[in-house]
Image (cartoon, rainbow, N blue to C red; front, side, top):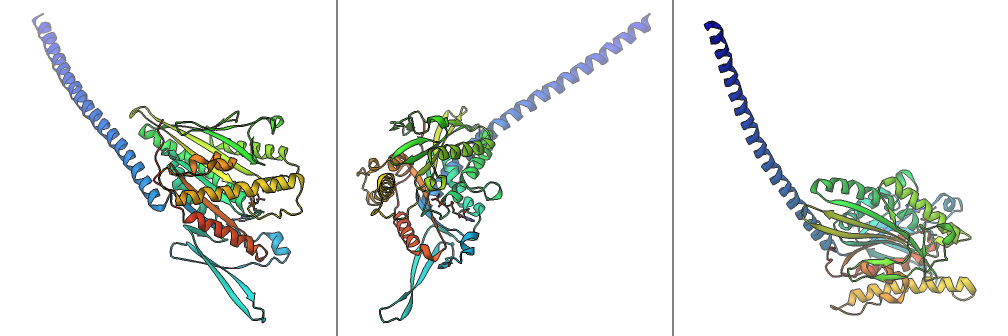
Length: 414
Ligand SMILES: Nc1ncnc2c1ncn2[C@@H]1O[C@H](COP(=O)(O)OP(=O)(O)OP(=O)(O)O)[C@@H](O)[C@H]1O
Protein backbone atom coordinates (compact mmCIF):
# COMPACT_ATOMS: atom_id res chain seq x y z
CA UNK A 1 0.00 0.00 0.00
CA UNK A 2 2.76 2.37 1.05
CA UNK A 3 4.61 1.42 -2.09
CA UNK A 4 1.59 2.32 -4.23
CA UNK A 5 1.24 5.71 -2.52
CA UNK A 6 4.94 6.40 -3.08
CA UNK A 7 4.55 5.50 -6.76
CA UNK A 8 1.56 7.84 -7.16
CA UNK A 9 3.43 10.66 -5.40
CA UNK A 10 6.40 10.08 -7.66
CA UNK A 11 4.25 10.17 -10.79
CA UNK A 12 2.50 13.33 -9.55
CA UNK A 13 5.86 14.99 -8.93
CA UNK A 14 7.05 14.11 -12.43
CA UNK A 15 3.80 15.41 -13.90
CA UNK A 16 4.20 18.59 -11.91
CA UNK A 17 7.78 19.02 -13.17
CA UNK A 18 6.70 18.36 -16.75
CA UNK A 19 3.86 20.88 -16.42
CA UNK A 20 6.24 23.47 -15.02
CA UNK A 21 8.68 22.96 -17.87
CA UNK A 22 5.82 23.22 -20.42
CA UNK A 23 4.62 26.39 -18.78
CA UNK A 24 8.14 27.76 -19.02
CA UNK A 25 8.33 26.73 -22.70
CA UNK A 26 4.97 28.44 -23.32
CA UNK A 27 6.21 31.56 -21.65
CA UNK A 28 9.33 31.49 -23.85
CA UNK A 29 7.17 31.06 -26.95
CA UNK A 30 5.01 33.99 -25.88
CA UNK A 31 8.06 36.18 -25.35
CA UNK A 32 9.42 35.14 -28.75
CA UNK A 33 6.06 35.84 -30.36
CA UNK A 34 6.01 39.31 -28.85
CA UNK A 35 9.53 39.92 -30.17
CA UNK A 36 8.56 38.66 -33.63
CA UNK A 37 5.45 40.86 -33.65
CA UNK A 38 7.54 43.87 -32.75
CA UNK A 39 10.05 43.00 -35.48
CA UNK A 40 7.20 42.60 -38.00
CA UNK A 41 5.75 45.96 -37.00
CA UNK A 42 9.07 47.71 -37.37
CA UNK A 43 9.61 45.98 -40.75
CA UNK A 44 6.17 47.17 -41.87
CA UNK A 45 7.00 50.72 -40.79
CA UNK A 46 10.33 50.47 -42.62
CA UNK A 47 8.55 49.19 -45.75
CA UNK A 48 6.09 52.10 -45.62
CA UNK A 49 8.92 54.60 -45.13
CA UNK A 50 10.83 53.05 -48.00
CA UNK A 51 7.76 53.14 -50.25
CA UNK A 52 7.29 56.84 -49.40
CA UNK A 53 10.95 57.47 -50.15
CA UNK A 54 10.73 55.53 -53.43
CA UNK A 55 7.78 57.68 -54.55
CA UNK A 56 9.64 60.86 -53.65
CA UNK A 57 12.86 59.84 -55.39
CA UNK A 58 11.00 58.53 -58.43
CA UNK A 59 9.22 61.86 -58.80
CA UNK A 60 12.45 63.84 -58.36
CA UNK A 61 14.04 61.82 -61.18
CA UNK A 62 11.02 62.42 -63.43
CA UNK A 63 11.17 66.16 -62.71
CA UNK A 64 14.86 66.26 -63.51
CA UNK A 65 14.10 64.59 -66.84
CA UNK A 66 11.46 67.30 -67.50
CA UNK A 67 7.70 67.26 -67.20
CA UNK A 68 7.27 67.53 -70.96
CA UNK A 69 9.37 65.09 -72.92
CA UNK A 70 9.49 64.31 -76.61
CA UNK A 71 10.49 61.04 -78.22
CA UNK A 72 10.84 60.66 -81.96
CA UNK A 73 10.08 57.29 -83.55
CA UNK A 74 10.83 56.49 -87.18
CA UNK A 75 8.92 53.51 -88.54
CA UNK A 76 10.49 51.05 -91.01
CA UNK A 77 9.21 51.02 -94.61
CA UNK A 78 6.35 48.51 -94.96
CA UNK A 79 6.34 45.68 -97.54
CA UNK A 80 3.88 47.42 -99.90
CA UNK A 81 6.05 50.55 -99.98
CA UNK A 82 9.14 48.50 -100.84
CA UNK A 83 7.17 46.65 -103.53
CA UNK A 84 6.25 50.06 -105.00
CA UNK A 85 9.96 51.03 -105.03
CA UNK A 86 9.42 53.58 -102.25
CA UNK A 87 12.57 55.64 -101.74
CA UNK A 88 13.81 55.92 -98.17
CA UNK A 89 14.89 59.41 -97.04
CA UNK A 90 18.44 59.96 -95.84
CA UNK A 91 18.46 59.91 -92.02
CA UNK A 92 21.29 59.61 -89.53
CA UNK A 93 20.86 58.67 -85.87
CA UNK A 94 23.50 59.62 -83.32
CA UNK A 95 24.16 61.03 -79.85
CA UNK A 96 25.51 59.30 -76.74
CA UNK A 97 21.99 59.09 -75.33
CA UNK A 98 20.39 58.10 -78.66
CA UNK A 99 18.82 61.52 -78.69
CA UNK A 100 19.83 63.04 -82.02
CA UNK A 101 18.96 62.62 -85.67
CA UNK A 102 19.69 64.36 -88.93
CA UNK A 103 17.53 64.47 -92.01
CA UNK A 104 19.19 65.26 -95.35
CA UNK A 105 17.99 66.10 -98.83
CA UNK A 106 19.63 66.98 -102.08
CA UNK A 107 18.79 70.40 -103.45
CA UNK A 108 19.61 71.79 -106.88
CA UNK A 109 20.53 75.43 -107.31
CA UNK A 110 19.19 77.47 -110.21
CA UNK A 111 22.52 76.79 -111.91
CA UNK A 112 21.97 73.06 -111.58
CA UNK A 113 24.51 72.53 -108.78
CA UNK A 114 23.39 69.77 -106.41
CA UNK A 115 24.16 70.21 -102.72
CA UNK A 116 23.08 68.32 -99.59
CA UNK A 117 20.97 70.19 -97.08
CA UNK A 118 20.89 68.75 -93.58
CA UNK A 119 18.41 69.32 -90.77
CA UNK A 120 19.65 68.25 -87.33
CA UNK A 121 17.17 67.59 -84.48
CA UNK A 122 17.58 66.70 -80.86
CA UNK A 123 14.92 65.11 -78.61
CA UNK A 124 14.81 63.30 -75.30
CA UNK A 125 15.13 60.04 -77.21
CA UNK A 126 15.17 59.02 -80.87
CA UNK A 127 13.99 55.53 -81.87
CA UNK A 128 15.36 54.44 -85.29
CA UNK A 129 13.28 52.13 -87.53
CA UNK A 130 14.65 48.90 -86.03
CA UNK A 131 13.53 49.84 -82.47
CA UNK A 132 11.11 47.44 -80.85
CA UNK A 133 7.91 48.16 -78.96
CA UNK A 134 9.66 46.81 -75.87
CA UNK A 135 12.45 49.39 -76.18
CA UNK A 136 9.92 52.21 -76.55
CA UNK A 137 7.93 51.01 -73.56
CA UNK A 138 11.04 50.73 -71.39
CA UNK A 139 11.39 54.49 -71.71
CA UNK A 140 7.78 55.29 -70.85
CA UNK A 141 7.29 52.76 -68.06
CA UNK A 142 8.58 55.31 -65.52
CA UNK A 143 5.71 57.62 -66.39
CA UNK A 144 3.24 54.77 -65.94
CA UNK A 145 4.73 54.39 -62.44
CA UNK A 146 4.13 58.13 -61.84
CA UNK A 147 0.41 57.66 -62.66
CA UNK A 148 0.30 54.88 -60.04
CA UNK A 149 1.94 57.25 -57.57
CA UNK A 150 -0.90 59.75 -58.09
CA UNK A 151 0.25 62.07 -60.89
CA UNK A 152 -1.58 62.94 -64.09
CA UNK A 153 0.26 61.65 -67.11
CA UNK A 154 -0.44 62.22 -70.76
CA UNK A 155 1.28 60.26 -73.51
CA UNK A 156 0.35 61.11 -77.04
CA UNK A 157 1.30 60.13 -80.55
CA UNK A 158 1.61 62.91 -83.12
CA UNK A 159 2.42 62.52 -86.79
CA UNK A 160 1.07 62.34 -90.31
CA UNK A 161 -1.31 59.58 -91.40
CA UNK A 162 0.49 56.26 -91.75
CA UNK A 163 3.50 57.31 -89.67
CA UNK A 164 2.95 54.58 -87.03
CA UNK A 165 0.87 56.28 -84.30
CA UNK A 166 -1.67 53.47 -83.89
CA UNK A 167 1.08 50.86 -84.18
CA UNK A 168 2.93 52.59 -81.32
CA UNK A 169 -0.13 53.06 -79.11
CA UNK A 170 -2.08 49.84 -79.67
CA UNK A 171 0.27 47.75 -81.78
CA UNK A 172 -0.36 44.38 -83.38
CA UNK A 173 -1.27 41.63 -80.86
CA UNK A 174 1.55 39.44 -79.50
CA UNK A 175 5.16 40.49 -79.08
CA UNK A 176 4.51 43.70 -81.00
CA UNK A 177 1.78 44.91 -78.69
CA UNK A 178 1.76 48.63 -78.14
CA UNK A 179 1.98 51.09 -75.27
CA UNK A 180 -1.67 50.76 -74.05
CA UNK A 181 -1.63 46.99 -73.36
CA UNK A 182 1.91 47.19 -71.97
CA UNK A 183 1.00 50.06 -69.64
CA UNK A 184 -2.04 48.19 -68.30
CA UNK A 185 0.06 45.04 -67.79
CA UNK A 186 2.71 46.99 -65.87
CA UNK A 187 0.04 48.63 -63.71
CA UNK A 188 -1.34 45.21 -62.71
CA UNK A 189 2.10 43.92 -61.81
CA UNK A 190 3.13 46.97 -59.79
CA UNK A 191 -0.27 47.22 -58.08
CA UNK A 192 0.20 43.65 -56.87
CA UNK A 193 3.66 44.43 -55.49
CA UNK A 194 2.37 47.58 -53.79
CA UNK A 195 -0.19 45.42 -51.97
CA UNK A 196 2.69 44.48 -49.67
CA UNK A 197 2.96 48.14 -48.66
CA UNK A 198 -0.81 48.12 -48.02
CA UNK A 199 -1.68 50.03 -51.19
CA UNK A 200 -4.84 48.76 -52.90
CA UNK A 201 -5.62 49.93 -56.43
CA UNK A 202 -8.68 49.99 -58.64
CA UNK A 203 -8.52 50.88 -62.32
CA UNK A 204 -11.23 52.36 -64.52
CA UNK A 205 -10.82 52.89 -68.24
CA UNK A 206 -12.66 55.21 -70.64
CA UNK A 207 -12.03 55.30 -74.35
CA UNK A 208 -13.29 58.16 -76.45
CA UNK A 209 -12.93 59.70 -79.87
CA UNK A 210 -12.96 63.38 -80.79
CA UNK A 211 -14.25 63.78 -84.31
CA UNK A 212 -15.25 67.16 -85.74
CA UNK A 213 -14.99 68.71 -82.25
CA UNK A 214 -17.52 66.22 -80.87
CA UNK A 215 -16.74 63.63 -78.21
CA UNK A 216 -17.90 60.03 -78.86
CA UNK A 217 -17.94 57.09 -76.46
CA UNK A 218 -15.96 54.16 -77.88
CA UNK A 219 -17.00 51.72 -75.13
CA UNK A 220 -20.74 52.29 -75.14
CA UNK A 221 -23.50 50.44 -76.94
CA UNK A 222 -22.74 50.51 -80.71
CA UNK A 223 -26.34 51.52 -81.46
CA UNK A 224 -25.91 54.68 -79.34
CA UNK A 225 -22.78 55.80 -81.14
CA UNK A 226 -23.04 59.47 -82.06
CA UNK A 227 -26.49 59.86 -80.46
CA UNK A 228 -25.43 60.99 -76.98
CA UNK A 229 -23.95 64.41 -76.28
CA UNK A 230 -20.97 64.23 -73.94
CA UNK A 231 -19.86 67.31 -71.99
CA UNK A 232 -16.45 67.78 -70.40
CA UNK A 233 -16.29 69.16 -66.85
CA UNK A 234 -13.32 69.83 -64.63
CA UNK A 235 -14.09 69.47 -60.94
CA UNK A 236 -12.37 71.53 -58.26
CA UNK A 237 -10.60 68.38 -57.02
CA UNK A 238 -8.75 68.24 -60.36
CA UNK A 239 -10.89 65.39 -61.70
CA UNK A 240 -12.07 65.56 -65.31
CA UNK A 241 -15.59 64.22 -65.83
CA UNK A 242 -17.08 63.41 -69.24
CA UNK A 243 -20.85 63.08 -68.95
CA UNK A 244 -22.52 59.76 -69.89
CA UNK A 245 -19.18 58.21 -70.81
CA UNK A 246 -18.90 54.44 -70.27
CA UNK A 247 -16.35 53.54 -67.62
CA UNK A 248 -14.96 49.99 -67.56
CA UNK A 249 -13.51 48.46 -64.41
CA UNK A 250 -10.24 46.91 -65.57
CA UNK A 251 -9.82 44.13 -63.04
CA UNK A 252 -7.77 41.74 -65.17
CA UNK A 253 -5.16 42.28 -67.93
CA UNK A 254 -7.35 40.35 -70.40
CA UNK A 255 -10.03 43.06 -70.08
CA UNK A 256 -7.88 45.53 -71.94
CA UNK A 257 -7.98 43.40 -75.12
CA UNK A 258 -11.77 43.13 -74.90
CA UNK A 259 -11.89 46.89 -74.42
CA UNK A 260 -9.63 47.64 -77.41
CA UNK A 261 -11.76 45.32 -79.58
CA UNK A 262 -14.95 47.06 -78.45
CA UNK A 263 -13.42 50.49 -79.17
CA UNK A 264 -12.40 49.46 -82.65
CA UNK A 265 -15.92 48.03 -83.30
CA UNK A 266 -17.46 51.34 -82.27
CA UNK A 267 -15.03 53.27 -84.41
CA UNK A 268 -16.01 51.08 -87.35
CA UNK A 269 -19.69 51.82 -86.67
CA UNK A 270 -19.04 55.54 -86.80
CA UNK A 271 -17.11 55.38 -90.03
CA UNK A 272 -17.73 54.19 -93.53
CA UNK A 273 -14.02 53.56 -93.91
CA UNK A 274 -12.30 52.71 -90.66
CA UNK A 275 -8.72 53.61 -91.60
CA UNK A 276 -9.84 56.83 -93.12
CA UNK A 277 -11.80 57.73 -89.99
CA UNK A 278 -9.08 56.71 -87.56
CA UNK A 279 -6.65 59.10 -89.20
CA UNK A 280 -9.15 61.95 -89.03
CA UNK A 281 -10.11 61.74 -85.38
CA UNK A 282 -8.27 61.77 -82.06
CA UNK A 283 -8.66 58.75 -79.80
CA UNK A 284 -8.15 59.16 -76.07
CA UNK A 285 -7.76 56.24 -73.67
CA UNK A 286 -8.16 57.55 -70.13
CA UNK A 287 -7.12 55.25 -67.30
CA UNK A 288 -7.95 56.38 -63.79
CA UNK A 289 -5.91 54.74 -61.01
CA UNK A 290 -7.32 54.98 -57.51
CA UNK A 291 -4.92 54.01 -54.74
CA UNK A 292 -5.94 53.52 -51.11
CA UNK A 293 -3.67 52.81 -48.15
CA UNK A 294 -5.81 52.01 -45.08
CA UNK A 295 -2.72 51.83 -42.83
CA UNK A 296 -1.42 55.34 -43.54
CA UNK A 297 -4.81 56.77 -44.52
CA UNK A 298 -3.33 58.01 -47.84
CA UNK A 299 -5.44 58.02 -51.00
CA UNK A 300 -4.25 58.96 -54.47
CA UNK A 301 -5.78 59.32 -57.92
CA UNK A 302 -3.55 59.31 -60.95
CA UNK A 303 -4.75 59.49 -64.54
CA UNK A 304 -2.89 57.98 -67.45
CA UNK A 305 -4.07 59.41 -70.79
CA UNK A 306 -2.90 57.72 -73.99
CA UNK A 307 -3.80 59.72 -77.07
CA UNK A 308 -3.58 58.76 -80.73
CA UNK A 309 -3.90 62.08 -82.56
CA UNK A 310 -5.48 62.67 -85.95
CA UNK A 311 -3.06 62.77 -88.90
CA UNK A 312 -1.08 66.00 -88.75
CA UNK A 313 -0.55 66.44 -92.49
CA UNK A 314 -1.60 69.82 -93.76
CA UNK A 315 -4.71 68.93 -95.72
CA UNK A 316 -5.50 71.03 -98.75
CA UNK A 317 -8.37 73.32 -97.79
CA UNK A 318 -9.00 74.42 -101.37
CA UNK A 319 -11.22 72.00 -103.18
CA UNK A 320 -12.53 70.48 -99.94
CA UNK A 321 -16.25 70.86 -99.47
CA UNK A 322 -18.99 69.64 -97.12
CA UNK A 323 -17.98 67.06 -94.53
CA UNK A 324 -14.41 66.90 -95.79
CA UNK A 325 -13.94 70.64 -95.32
CA UNK A 326 -15.47 70.46 -91.84
CA UNK A 327 -13.15 67.57 -90.88
CA UNK A 328 -10.11 69.38 -92.25
CA UNK A 329 -10.94 72.53 -90.34
CA UNK A 330 -11.54 70.57 -87.11
CA UNK A 331 -8.20 68.73 -87.32
CA UNK A 332 -6.25 71.85 -88.24
CA UNK A 333 -7.90 73.75 -85.43
CA UNK A 334 -7.34 71.18 -82.70
CA UNK A 335 -3.72 70.48 -83.61
CA UNK A 336 -2.91 74.17 -83.85
CA UNK A 337 -4.65 74.74 -80.49
CA UNK A 338 -2.44 72.03 -79.03
CA UNK A 339 0.59 73.96 -80.33
CA UNK A 340 -0.83 77.20 -78.86
CA UNK A 341 -1.37 75.62 -75.44
CA UNK A 342 2.18 74.31 -75.45
CA UNK A 343 3.58 77.71 -76.50
CA UNK A 344 1.54 79.38 -73.77
CA UNK A 345 2.93 76.91 -71.23
CA UNK A 346 6.40 77.63 -72.53
CA UNK A 347 6.01 81.36 -72.05
CA UNK A 348 3.75 81.15 -69.05
CA UNK A 349 4.35 83.21 -66.00
CA UNK A 350 2.71 82.04 -62.77
CA UNK A 351 -1.07 82.19 -63.22
CA UNK A 352 -0.95 83.29 -66.89
CA UNK A 353 -3.72 82.40 -69.36
CA UNK A 354 -3.48 79.07 -71.17
CA UNK A 355 -6.01 78.73 -74.02
CA UNK A 356 -7.26 75.24 -73.13
CA UNK A 357 -10.84 76.07 -74.06
CA UNK A 358 -10.07 76.73 -77.72
CA UNK A 359 -10.54 73.09 -78.74
CA UNK A 360 -12.20 69.96 -77.34
CA UNK A 361 -8.87 68.15 -77.30
CA UNK A 362 -6.97 70.74 -75.24
CA UNK A 363 -9.97 71.24 -72.95
CA UNK A 364 -10.21 67.49 -72.34
CA UNK A 365 -6.46 67.31 -71.64
CA UNK A 366 -6.34 70.44 -69.51
CA UNK A 367 -5.21 68.57 -66.41
CA UNK A 368 -2.57 66.63 -68.28
CA UNK A 369 -0.95 69.52 -70.11
CA UNK A 370 0.21 71.85 -67.41
CA UNK A 371 1.99 72.33 -64.13
CA UNK A 372 0.14 69.50 -62.46
CA UNK A 373 1.08 66.81 -64.94
CA UNK A 374 3.74 64.93 -66.84
CA UNK A 375 3.52 64.79 -70.60
CA UNK A 376 5.26 62.71 -73.19
CA UNK A 377 4.86 63.11 -76.93
CA UNK A 378 5.86 60.50 -79.46
CA UNK A 379 6.42 62.18 -82.78
CA UNK A 380 6.01 59.38 -85.30
CA UNK A 381 7.58 59.80 -88.69
CA UNK A 382 7.62 57.95 -91.98
CA UNK A 383 10.99 56.92 -93.46
CA UNK A 384 9.97 57.71 -97.05
CA UNK A 385 11.41 60.51 -99.19
CA UNK A 386 7.98 61.33 -100.55
CA UNK A 387 6.95 62.35 -97.00
CA UNK A 388 10.06 64.48 -96.42
CA UNK A 389 8.21 67.79 -96.07
CA UNK A 390 5.59 66.42 -93.67
CA UNK A 391 8.36 64.77 -91.66
CA UNK A 392 10.16 68.09 -91.41
CA UNK A 393 6.94 69.80 -90.23
CA UNK A 394 6.35 67.10 -87.58
CA UNK A 395 9.94 67.37 -86.33
CA UNK A 396 9.66 71.17 -86.11
CA UNK A 397 6.40 70.95 -84.16
CA UNK A 398 8.02 68.42 -81.81
CA UNK A 399 11.05 70.69 -81.33
CA UNK A 400 8.70 73.44 -80.17
CA UNK A 401 7.15 71.02 -77.67
CA UNK A 402 10.57 69.84 -76.53
CA UNK A 403 11.69 73.32 -75.60
CA UNK A 404 8.64 73.70 -73.35
CA UNK A 405 9.49 73.11 -69.74
CA UNK A 406 6.49 73.19 -67.41
CA UNK A 407 6.30 73.71 -63.67
CA UNK A 408 6.72 71.14 -60.95
CA UNK A 409 4.05 68.44 -60.92
CA UNK A 410 1.96 68.10 -57.79
CA UNK A 411 0.52 64.78 -56.64
CA UNK A 412 -3.27 64.65 -56.57
CA UNK A 413 -4.65 63.44 -53.26
CA UNK A 414 -8.30 62.81 -52.61
N1 LIG B 1 7.46 50.39 -85.83
C1 LIG B 1 6.84 49.75 -86.80
N2 LIG B 1 7.28 48.55 -87.23
C2 LIG B 1 6.65 47.87 -88.23
N3 LIG B 1 5.58 48.36 -88.88
C3 LIG B 1 5.10 49.55 -88.52
C4 LIG B 1 5.69 50.31 -87.45
N4 LIG B 1 5.00 51.45 -87.32
C5 LIG B 1 4.02 51.40 -88.23
N5 LIG B 1 4.06 50.27 -88.94
C6 LIG B 1 3.15 49.91 -90.04
O1 LIG B 1 2.97 51.08 -90.82
C7 LIG B 1 1.62 51.23 -91.25
C8 LIG B 1 1.03 52.56 -90.77
O2 LIG B 1 1.03 52.58 -89.35
P1 LIG B 1 -0.20 53.09 -88.47
O3 LIG B 1 -1.49 52.60 -88.99
O4 LIG B 1 0.13 52.82 -87.06
O5 LIG B 1 -0.09 54.65 -88.77
P2 LIG B 1 -0.95 55.84 -88.16
O6 LIG B 1 -0.02 56.96 -87.99
O7 LIG B 1 -1.68 55.39 -86.95
O8 LIG B 1 -1.98 56.13 -89.28
P3 LIG B 1 -3.47 56.75 -89.15
O9 LIG B 1 -3.27 58.19 -88.87
O10 LIG B 1 -4.05 56.45 -90.48
O11 LIG B 1 -4.18 56.04 -88.04
C9 LIG B 1 0.89 50.02 -90.70
O12 LIG B 1 0.88 49.04 -91.72
C10 LIG B 1 1.76 49.56 -89.54
O13 LIG B 1 1.61 48.18 -89.28
